[in-house]
Length: 293
Image 1 (tube, one colour):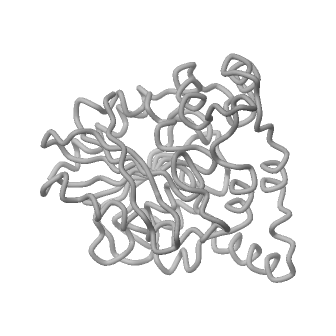
Image 2 (cartoon, one colour):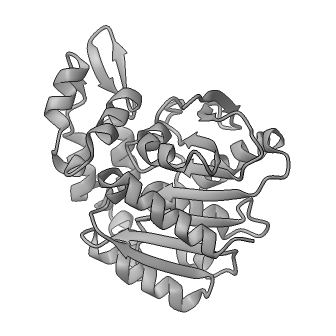
């Protein structure tokens, strides 16, 4: 896939970066990634969708080719910046409809953008978004108030993550079927190694520093359910049968609050779209065909 790099200098002194495809008049799919990943990690899925869409791929602060940018600015500001970067490049795509797609952390950012008045997205497809339930958020806030939430198990695991390898083959061998990469198709793992890692004098290293990944795991969106309860254009959530149990609870709660939200359960875990990109693309295209116009 031929991709053109873009950049967006933010008001916070760092630059966001990403890629787009040359406009061809097709609808535009805007992609936001999960924590620790980058937008090009999803190339196996995007290749399946390429006949139907142009793409605008966005990397959040400290991910992919975007600047680290000092301390993490938070989920809500990250959503605002992703929206601003898209709007700064919207002229490239004339008046083509834009469909917001996001995985995990990126799914929540996409939902936050979409819940604003005048969403830039005609509709959204959220892939296993980490939608924390209100009770989870209340606990996070209370733990954060006494300085304990930053020590949660996912943040601590991120800080222990290996981040150096001598070469790509060693990285591939180490990561294959390990942890969050369990059951990934080989092409999906190759996309992660090619685009979420970089070559340095010390060998292959993660582009997203474990400290940034831990910062995100140690934080949460502000006023999430207040925003999710706002009227919005159509939203589809696809989540994995074997993903985190709280996601299903949150999705059901959101559907009760917002009639624009639909959901589909699919085979696989939190990264089901990397386990079976073709099946995920079929679900997305079938939904979009049913909701055309």
